[in-house]
Image (tube, rainbow, N blue to C red):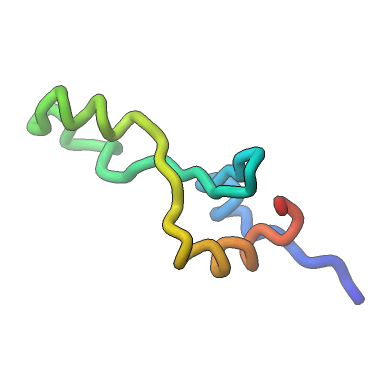
Length: 66
């Protein structure tokens, strides 16, 4: 059986925590930030967890991270 390839786009976007949860960064931060309130910009900087319903799909993209 050949080895599976990791989806490189997903590997750059997701990290697995010690408990097996998947961490992601929030979107809407790349440009047009001057029109967004500072409070919103600060909240977008913090990472968040991926919803459980999306875990199975991401696990297929990152076969050796779990």
